[in-house]
Length: 140
Figure 1 (cartoon, one colour):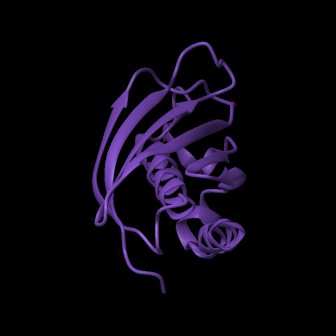
Figure 2 (spheres, rainbow, N blue to C red):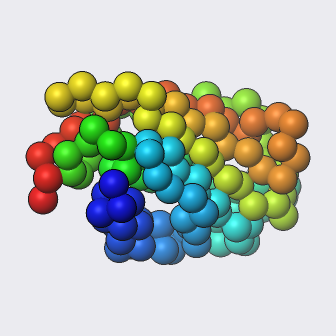
């Protein structure tokens, strides 16, 4: 299991968009991943309000879901997104980091199913939730 966790850590560090967005891998293992993204003015989608663009939030959620699949005990290797549905519940509070927790809750020979929630520092209400399907690929 440690090898899968290390592989997932290395993969996240190697993704150029994850680095550019400032993603920080907070926690990973046993089919669960937590990744945060600090507030950054370059990610603002609405200059008047200072709200982070939805695309940055979706990239965070997609990356976190993929990491959850990669570290699942039954996942043999890499993964790719098949389908990801994101429901935006509210805008993220300007100036606050966003953290996503994703859990791979079911895995078959070829598809993994993941759920995720993105929260800002106002942790009583989600910014977004996601559910998705990801490929399960042979080890590489």
